[in-house]
Length: 99
Image (cartoon, rainbow, N blue to C red; front, side):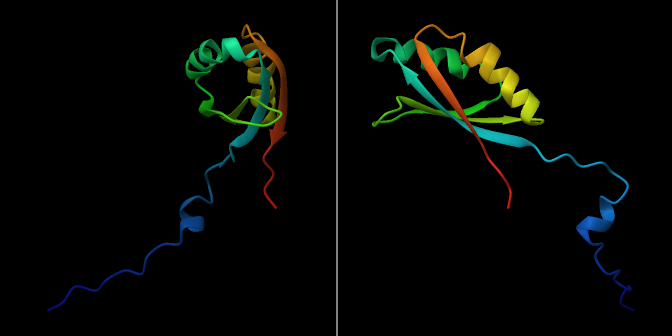
């Protein structure tokens, strides 16, 4: 005799009693001294919140993708960690919004 299968539980039902936080993310557009770009990339690779960093052409030199618990954490990383890297002239933060 076949066993009776239970219907799957909806994901929302499983999480109803758990506080779920949506992580914040941002792109940081960096203007840098060209000769210091390799050192900047090395420093960025040591920051836990940095998920990617790419050298690009145009008015910016490096584009960084950050993930954090909330926008405050993102701000702290940009102010304390990224802006303090030698060779970073300017860092413009573009927060990702969910529409």
